Amino acid sequence: MKKYFVLSTLIVALVVTESAFGQTAAGATQTQTGGAQATDAGITPNGVIGDVAVIDASGKQMFVKTAAGAVVAVSLDDATSYMRVAPGEKDLKNATKTTLAEVGVGDRVFARGKVADDRRSVPARVVIVMSKADISKKHDSDRERWRERGVVGVVSALDPATKEITLQSRGRGEPQPVVIAAGKDTVKFRRYAPDSVKFSDAKESSFAELKVGDQLRARGEKSADGVRFTAEEIVSGSFRTMSGTVSAVNAQAGEIKLKDSQSQQELTVVISKDSMARRIPAEFAQMMAMRGGQGGGPGRTGGGGGGAADSPQGQPGARPTNPNPGAGGPPPGGGGARGMGGPGRMMGGGGGDFAERLEQLPEVTVAELKPGDTLIVSSTAGTDPSRVTAIHLIAGAEALVNVMQQRRAASSGGGPSMSGLGLDFGIGLP
Image (cartoon, rainbow, N blue to C red; front, side, top):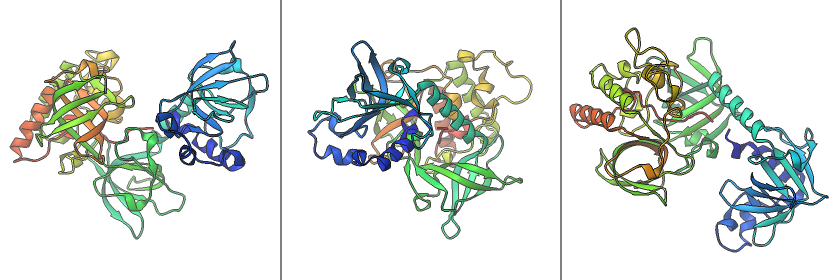
């Protein structure tokens, strides 16, 4: 999981073992004054949790930035003790002593002490540290486990009596149905919250919250024949994917106005620090558009057979296969942006999730966008249909959107085929 999720189990254990820390952040804020600092769950009466932003060793002070962005000054003295724990630990029995000199910027810390009434400073009695490098290793390890022991796709059927889920799983070919057994009490359910863009922000959930059309990723064990899957953890979400033209840009607020090409309604798109905003190089966009417009169907153009992206709900479909199979394609390493290895490799040659391949594209900032730009945006289904927070944003998409509009017109108003162009959004890895 991402770094702001890593300490959660440890914090829960500390809440249980230390009564002084038993008050929740929500309860604490009821007695505080207004402002962002007063509503920050990373600040409680007896400590602050966040990343080290600045260390002043000579002044015996560090500044800790919470996940919500508040900065708290942590004062240190000779009596302050420092403990290092590994990501994933649930208590301090395996903690080791460390020193201030071994704490680095970017490390995750829990500074324990009585927080000032204005919630802007705390004299720390104990500083519990998880190093940035250890968190990164844990993150990479978690992602690999989800890759090796995971399945991802679109929910096509639900059986509440047996708690079985039929998933149209994404793979290199056509979507394949997999029955997920989720009836054990040990199965952990989480679900993307409305307007959330982070995998790690998914909330505790249950089988009852699942819906046909949801995107779902499960981790567990697949049967030898691949048709059944015993789940240990399930993350689901309801997503929407849209395309349109930018009509206004507010770089300071991190927002744009987008005219949806299908509904013709104007939407406000929020690009947060957690949004993945990328630009498709012109040569790749043109190649994908040409292949998408050849009439071979989604299975031939990288989508693997229609899928939920073509449905009225606008859900993503099957994971794209290589849009450049067989001979005649560019050699590996040729023509790619930032060493991506060519169009085929960029969009599907490795069989990985599209969101992972998207990370390799050149970044784009809100300030670089301008009215008239054509974008493709994915988001969760939020509480306000006219306002969305981008999970993924793709600029340079004019050629792709033109092909989708042509397909929609040819199919008498059917939804645009994102999957047919190799654009398969959904739940990414942690």
